[in-house]
Image (cartoon, rainbow, N blue to C red; front, side, top):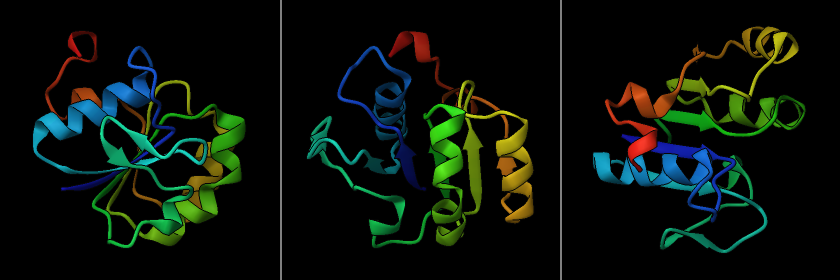
Length: 121
């Protein structure tokens, strides 16, 4: 599976970093998205999800709702099969806008969805 982690972090305590490590461990191709650093966990980062050259199967979001809202159109433009809004990344406005954009959205922890425990990462 090809997965973009929006809000990926260099801080190993943050869930954006745990997600990168979880998907690598799961055997997926991971694209960390963070405009503020060059690499995360040895993987090159992308400034925007739109900079990722490949089609994506999944986008998983680790940003606060205010920031998530500002990039929803970019996320919709990638046309990924699944969009995971992890805890803390959404509110009613974000969900309503994502639905308007026709996203196949999941309101759940994407790490748990791949049968890994974020507390063990």
